[in-house]
Every structure is written in C-alpha cells, then in structure tokens.
Image (tube, rainbow over all chains, first blue to last red):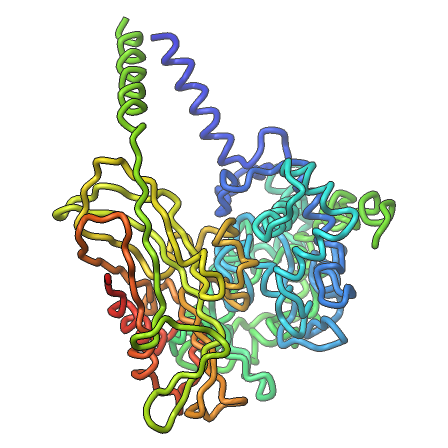
Amino acid sequence: MNCLKIVSVCLLFIFVSSFLGSKDGLFNIPQNWPKPIYNFSKNPLTKEKIELGRALFYDPILSQNNTISCSGCHSQFTAFTHVDHALSHGINDRIGTRNAPVLINLAWNKRFMWDGAINHLDVQALAPISHSDEMGSNISEVVTKLQHSKIYPPLFFKAFGDSLITGENTLKCISQFMLTLVSANSKYDSVKRNESSFTKQEENGYKIFNKNCTSCHIEPLFTNQKFENNGLPLDLELKDFGRMKVTQNPNDSLKFKVPTLRNIEFSYPYMHDGRFKNLNSVLDHYGRGIVKSKTLALQLEQPIVLSANEKVDLISFLLTLSDKKFLFNPEFGYPKNLLLSLPKD
Amino acid sequence: MRFRFAVFIIAFGINVKLLSAQNFSTISVNFKPMFGHSVLQLNDSIYLLNSRDSIQFTTLKFYISGIAFWNNSTTVWIESNSFHLLDATDSNTLKLAFKVPADMIYSEIKFKLGIDSLTNVSGAMGGDLDPTKGMYWTWQGGYVNFKLEGKSNLCQSRKHEFQFHLGGYAHPYNILQSISLLTSNRQNVNIELDLKTFISNVDLANKPSVMSPNKEALILSNQLGKLFIVK
C-alpha cells in the first residue's frame, strides 16, 4: 500500500509541475493570478530552448532579406511594442495596417492579434514571418536558412538533442521565450502584495478605474480577452472591420481585442491603428468621441465623462501599472552572447 | 499483497499482449487522384473539360487523418497519431501502409479528409503537420485541408489561374469530412478521387479562388468528401 502512496504522490507532483510550466523557476505564476491558458506540458520550458527562442526573436534571419527581427516591432523598453509608430513598418519600410501589440503575459492569452485570427501562441510567429509587409519570408525558408547557418544547428542540438531543425521546434522555441515575458512587478502589484501603498491620487484613480474601466480591463491581466467595439470611428482609408474579417459575422464588425493596460505608460500610441498619441486623447475618446453603432460595447452606451481632475487621477493610477523590472530585465534583452560572439555566415 | 497481485496481473497482461501482437500483416492503401478514367498528372498534362475548355493542375495536396478499420460496425484497428499529407508530386506519399494484427478482418475503412479542430488549435506540430509543409495558414490559425491549384481558360483571373485552399475547423465553417468506404477484406486497397467530377461542379469562371474558411469552402469540401471510391 505504501508503494501505491509513493506512486500517487509522484504522479501528483508530475501533474502539478506540468501545470506550473517548470520545476526550476523558469516560469512562475504570480501570486493570486489565474492558471495560464498555455499548455506547458506540450512544450516544457528549458533554459536552452528559452535562450534559443530569444536568439531567434532578436535575429533578422527570420526575414526574407535578413533586415527585420521580431524585436524590430517589439522592443523591450516599450513593453515589446513598436516605439512611436502608429502603424508598424516591416521589410523594405513597408507599412502595415495595425499597431504592433505589446508582448506581455502571453501565457494567459486565449487568442492573438487585434482580431484574434491566430489561435495559439506557437503559430503566432508564422503571421509576421510570412506577411509581405512584415518579414516577407516563410517558415520553410527560415528553417533552411537556420539549418545552413553556423550558430543555429549547435543551439538546436543543445536544446533538442538533434541538430536537424524543424518548423515545429523553431516555433516552439520562439513561444518559450515569449512565455517568459511575464510582467507582474509594477507598483500596482506591490500594492496588491501589501509591500507598498498607493498615493492619495493613485488611490482615487483606482476608484475611478474600478467604476468605469474594469468591466473590460479586468485585473490582474487588465483585459477580459474579449473582442469589443469601443466606438472608434472607422478609418476610411484602412477600412479595418477587425474581428468580422475572421468570423465573417456582422455582429463582430469593428470589434478588436481588449488590450492589457499593463505598461501602458510606454506602449503608446494607442488603439489597433495607433491613432491616439497619449492617454489624454484616449480618455477624451471615451468621454466625447464614441460613435454609436449596433456592435458598440454595452459598457460604452453611456460615455465615460470625467472631470479634468478625475482624468489626472486615473492616469496616475494607470502609471502604477508600469513595470520597470520587466522593461529593463536583462534576461529579455538582446542576447549579445549568442548573436554577437559567434561567427555569422 | 493486493498490490503484488495487481503487478502480476498487469505484467501478465503485457506479456499476453506482446505474444499475441507478434503476428502482423501490412495493409496498403493507395490513393489515386484521377481525372476521369486516367491517373491525374500534374503540370504538363492538359485535360479537356468539354469540347471547348481545358484545364491543367499544378498542385494537389491534402490531409488524410484518423484512419480506422471497421468490421460490421465495430472498430477493429485505429491508427494512432494518424496524420498523412498526400502530395501528388511525390507518389510515395500517396501510398499508406498500416501494420495491423495478422488475424484482423475488416469490411470498412474510415478516415477524415483534413485535420480535426482539436489539432487545429493545439499549436505547432511536427511531421506531416509541420508548418514548413506549407499547409498551415499564416494570416490566421488553422490547417489547409485540401489544396488544388492550376489553370484553365475558363478562369477570368490573372494568368487564368485557380486556387482552392480549403480549410476551416470552427463553426459554422468546420469543413472536415468524414469518409466511410465499404470494402472486402484485402491487403491492397485502391482509393480513387476523381477531380474531373469535382472541378466540373466548380464555377471556375466566377469563383477561381477559395482561400478562406467560408461557405464556398464548406460546399466544395462536402462535394470532395463524396468522391472517394474504392476500386
């Protein structure tokens, strides 16, 4: 009977650890956060795979002419979005149609892209790699280039015990690096952990937030992961109807993914097409810019009218979502040791 | 004591299974894309659709998955991890072989044309499902189940080309086709797929491209699903 107990305890441990993602702190669920959506048991994190994914993330080898890397439109110090660009630009300076989203807490994401066209983190990278305005390549070309490079076959060998590179392994490594991009060390988080406290202004801003914003931007991820029409007037040039293009359902017209507000201080410009340069413009939109239509979010049927003081307080709360430890964590930065020290061909 | 007994039973079970599973036989299932009565050739062959119109094919790739052998309404063998990409440019991919128990008797083969919805939302896969095989959509999630490309004078498109990339795993455009074919118990099965019948029902003039999960993809897939026959 004792043996059975030991076996079941071991099984339980394996079961639990597969949910946690890793046994050695490569991925930790922040206190009081929900379980991640990503199934780590199908792609268990290892140090080698994360490092390889990080090299791929920062290496322009993923683009057709070796000029654009993922980090080109997703730089760390802006919470992995495209600094100061309303619409992101890719290969040969071609300009896309949307604002690059932040890459934060992706393990909890249900769907990817502003319209949710991508259903899993592993296959997300295929979109920018293949898009003619982004990296202009394809995964098969990328794998061939990696296989013929000097640095990658040994790195894949270290990570997978096989230097034969596949699309599956390439994509899973990129996922591994992106999964580690967890931002949970803002002032807001430390307040929640009772390690510090809000100023009076931040506290008031938090109350305004809870009254007006939290139904879509739910804590602790600050998004409900849903697609909503937040009343932006249609850009007649881009004619982007968002989620409807994916579902072909008119009820999804003008709906876009509710973005996280974490690190919002650094992720400007805002909205799917980057139309607002600063947070004041965003709050102005919710106060007097909402365009009514059939698919408008129910929460926005009444505009969010705030006084000048309330706006200042709300913004001071939003700034407590900045996570400097995340934005400047050297583990997420350019992997100098991998990409600079080794010979390239 | 009870535990020891359980180990004994399990070990005995494994042993029995090993002993009985030592006799295998191989069943070959050969897929033959046809154009009418002749085996379909890509690229150089020009086929007549009628007295006026002609057609050429450049690409034919499709997934066959979830293969199972049945006997009188009971499953007798299921292939595990059953995903096969068939590519008309590589005749080896059209011949599938299954190692089954030697005494297996079957009367029906069942399989799917395409990839099931669970696999479609499970991230990056390897083998025939590796995205480098060119059968995973990049602008949105999901596999292309069936890809047929070529040209015909009927198409009013650029270079008279047509492209059918049929895929879709989510309601209301889950286009996966379940196919059941009755057959006698034999070691070599030839399954034909007549693309002449398929393409003759397609509106090449007005709809030379279907490349999203939509109503057209659903209609075309339903038609394809009915065209597999055992010869």
